[in-house]
Length: 172
Image (tube, rainbow, N blue to C red; front, side, top):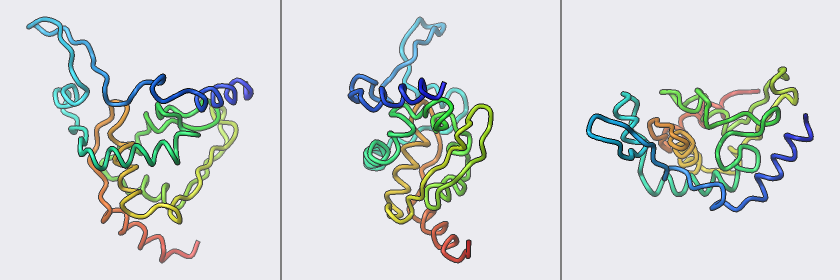
């Protein structure tokens, strides 16, 4: 089983971005009373009462570039991770939470989980606090929180700076 996950991981890394599909450009077919038509994810979100996705091009563009450079090797361009190896960020409730504090801390300090039946490798994530500045962390989190049909508020560099300052005071 481990080899199949590793094989899938390698396959994802070898695929060109265009072959895997650009994120945020898909439409969903709708069969409304006024006839079928296509809806963009942001239209569906507003109808379901979810927050509108952030469409701030600079943050989403910068965040997407950082995600591809720093995150996609483990999480995949689709954010789904690799089964039994790297958890999904696309379906992560922590990433979409109303309060982004926890996910900011994970980016800044890294995290290590325990082994479970579903993820026997005890997934870990390195710290990016030494490598990414507050604006870069905010951009990549805004991208993650608003990609793959997700919709959440943007993360500001000030949010990241507050978390970074609080973490600097810790002794662990």
